[in-house]
Length: 483
Ligand code: NAD
Image (cartoon, rainbow, N blue to C red; front, side):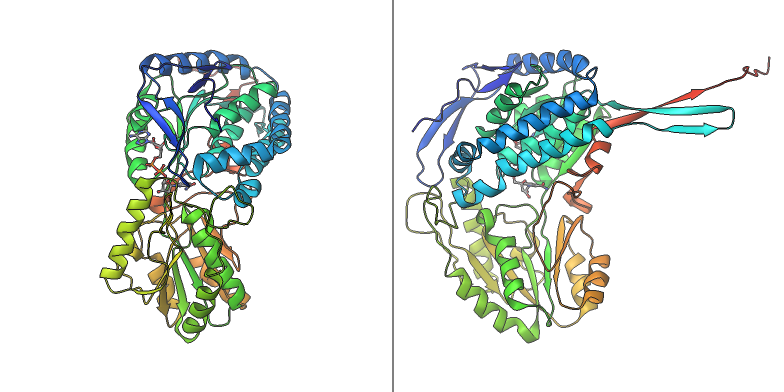
C-alpha cells in the first residue's frame, strides 16, 4: 500500500518537494505503521506559495463570478465520482471508519463546493438611492487567504474554507494539520482538474511554526483556522497585529439536555452520535449530557446496552463503527482524562481503558454522576468520553449548561415544543439542535460564540467573511465647497 504523494506541497498547479523541511510521518492509527513521509514547508516553499497565490488572485478576481462557480461545481462532481478512493484515503489519513468517511468527508466537501459554486453568480452589491445622488456597493474579495486545518476532518475542512473563499474571488494557501496531511492535496488536484487556474488554491505542509509564518506574512489578508482554543488565541492575536480578517472555528464543551419527556431511544442515539462518532474527535460534540434525574438510570442502561453493540476494529472494514484515535499523542491525552474521571469520583458505566490491540484504540466510555466541577465536565477531551450529569429543573440546567467558557453547540431532547424553543433560546451556543445532534448541512451557518470562535463557516454567512464591500458615492450635481 502506497499513499506517498508526488510531493509534499501543491503550489501553482503542481506537486512540489523540498526535503530540507522537517519530516512529517503519516502514521496509520489502526496499526501504527508509517504510510508516507512528507516535509514541512521551508521559508522558500512558503514564499513560493504566497507569490503564486497573490499573482493568481489578481487574475481570478477578474473572472465573472458565475464562471468561478462553474469550476467549483465541476470539482464537486469529480469529488462525488471519486468518493470511494477519497474515503479510503481519508480513512488512512485519520483512522476514521470507512462507513463514516464514505458519507461524511468527500461528500460534505462536495456539498460545500456545489453550494458556493451555485451561490457565486448571485454575489452582488446594492444600489442605495439618496434622492438625486446615489451610492452603489461592490462586493470585493479580500485577497490572499490562509486556511489552517485540524486533523479530524481534513477533506471537509479544506473544502469548507476553499469553497467560499474561491467563490468570492480570493486565492488560498491551505496548511493541513501535520497529523493528516494527505487529503487536502487531493482537493488541490481535483480543483485543478476542474479548471481552477494554477496558484488559486495551494497546499503547504507543516507544523504550527509554518502556520505562524503564513499568518504573519504581509501578503496575507485573511486567516481561517480550525483548531483548539489555545491555538486560536495565538493566531487571532498574530492576525490582529496586522489587522487581518479572521474566522476562528475552535473547540467546545457543549451541553446536550435530555428532559424527562424525551424519546429515550432518540436521546440515546443523539448522545452516541454526539460523543462516539469519529471516536469523539468532533469539535461540536455534546460531551456534557444533562439527563433529568427521573429517567437517568433508564437512559444509562439503554446507553450501555447500545454502546456494547459498537463494532470496534480496523477502520477499513465495512462493519467497523469505532476506529482508533487519530494518533498516539491524542490517545495519551484522552487516557489522562480517563484517569482524572476515575480519580475525581465519576461512576464508570462502560469503557474507560485503552484496548489491548495494535493501534491507538480507546473503548467508548460513559461516566455517570459527573458533577460540574470535575475536570471531565470542564475541559474539552476530544475523544470517546461522555460525561452524564443529573438535573432537576429547567432553569437550573440552563444555567449549568451555560457555565462554560465555550459556546460551540447545544442540544435539547424533549417532546414539549414550547420548552424546546424556550430552552434553546437561552443557551449560549452557535449551532443548536432540537431532538437531533451534530447535523452540519452546508446551507446552515456553523460556528461558535464565546471562546469557541469568531465568524461562521457555511451558508450565505460565510460570504461575509470572505468578501468586503466597497461603497461608491455618486454625485449628480455640483460640489458645494465652502471656499
Ligand atoms: P491544534 O490547535 O493543535 O492545531 C490546529 C492547526 O493549527 C494545525 O494545523 C496546527 O499545525 C496549526 N497551528 C498550531 N499552532 C499554530 C500557530 N501558532 N500558528 C498557526 N497555526 C498553528 O488543533 P488540533 O489538535 O489539530 O484539532 C483539535 C482541536 O480543533 C479541538 O480543540 C477541536 O475542538 C478543534 N476543532 C474545531 C472545529 C470547528 O469547526 N469548530 C472542527 C474541528 C476541530
